Length: 451
Image (cartoon, rainbow, N blue to C red):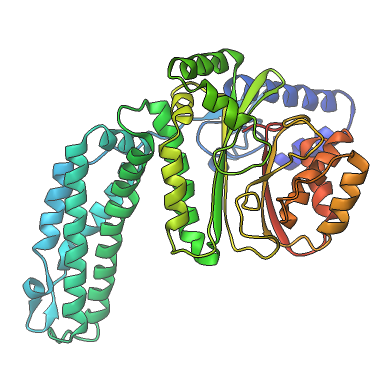
């Protein structure tokens, strides 16, 4: 049955409609137990690996009865990791085929910079960016160092070859010169992949996690590192402050185990102090019940009117690396984990930690965490924030802390307003955005919709 035919059957009513509802519920059941993506009436080529397809579209096959009702697209096997010796061998071939070695009578040889060896190395390195490759290198510092040296060697070679090409010393033909430039760019990309995309992330995660971290902890820190690395790049768009919030959903058993470990290490007082603060500034935590789960949040912020590019993310990394409570938590299993991060160029509000994004829904006059935790970030402006703030304070009987002067603060409060009216999270967010005037891009994480 094709997708269109299934849609017509579903809308026809009667037994066919009941059948559609049945399979939708069956799909939800599958998703709930196995977290497998489920699709209706789709071709296997159009769905990601590991998907379950009900009524798969297979035009080349004719089905009878219930045959072909369900199809499963298996996950592709991950590419094999190339050996470090293979990488070094390829780098040796590349280094031996320089401009000086490959020009004969003014013509450039076809194997300049190893050609096939260079292309193959670039492709093979992709496997080292996988989780398996990351864990292998993290657990084998000598291998990491060898890969780092190979990357540095190729980077230096790329600059040397570029200098030789663009100085005009080798007098290449109009046809060979662009080809040589293209190969040098591929060499640069290969060296970048080895150092910036493979080696440096391993080193940075090591700095965040410290030695002897479990695979579960490394997975968390690897995600944190990826977010911070991208925030670092975005600092050119704004750098007076930066912040990050980590949101974990835990079972009651895991929460108890974490608190027990904190007590053993004399960190219980630190936990109470940080989770008891009302203003969302650097180091503040929240520990709240969220249905059958518990939510623990960690927020790190930095704000400085004067500084250099890279200062903010470096400060956030130091705070995360030195957080003993976070180190204890990431070693334990969690149900959900979400990150929100932002780098700011203040347009409304002073350059202070409270104004730094993320901003939460805490107010004076309501217990912290009551009604859920909401963290947001904003690019743009909320032009009518003053009117909305006054209306919210009057209707809810609460007060926005005086230290918060950013227009972003009204976003989680307006979302809270619609949640309190019984709206689901997605609808509350949509309605809140509809209340705002101005130009803005808004992002949110909440314990009301973990993960």
